[in-house]
Image 1: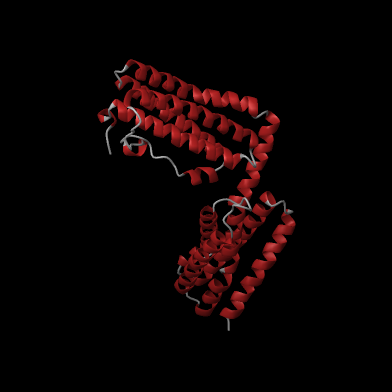
Image 2: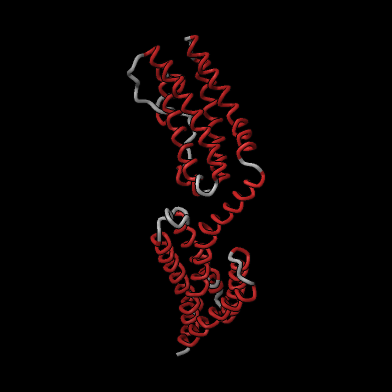
Length: 318
């Protein structure tokens, strides 16, 4: 990687052109992603894309005038000191606020680049162009704020906030809840069957850990492969799979960890209390995010958990 201070003016202009091309494409992808659920905010990024396109044309004109048609194959990735950006797919799946924050970071970094580049250039017109772009990039955040006031009125912001909440439920809460329910309930039977069959805390712990991890891997893959999110709007399959798998494992570990206690009776008593806490937590999440009455949610979950718990004790006592 090259150091910034070693760049020639030709290379500086080439890097600036590639930056504007990359950022314009990024803003276009942001706009396309937001268009269906956040149309007003999508207009903001469309306007920012158009402004980046204007910067690119000015830089290209300056480059061709000074250096001709040939451009060295150098980008920001070849220069030491640039901050490595988060993958675009991860930013997109993190929500509208993360997208806006990423745009602010991009403009701040570009403004710093143009300031330093202008200070290093000796050619008058190039120095002026880079200085002008530095000021424009610094004003871009203010411009975006003004565009938001114009294009995203208060009622539209409320609509977008509600849409963001729905996406959060679809992409995070729902797969997490499915995993927590599966991990908390499905691992009860093998854990308590092993506990009552052996009356040995460590043996029960080993079975519980194996069941929790195995269920987490299985549920994670099942959720990730269920759909790619392109039609359902449920988000990136990798994120859903990770969330579901981790919550499944966490649900199984909750009532397994008490069996680290050597005394079988004490460990079982604590595990039962943990199971009750897990079932109440699941009921509350369903009440809070799935619009399910709390008593109905609690009844459904407790009955299911109780039946699995009895099955474990029954098979363990044979």
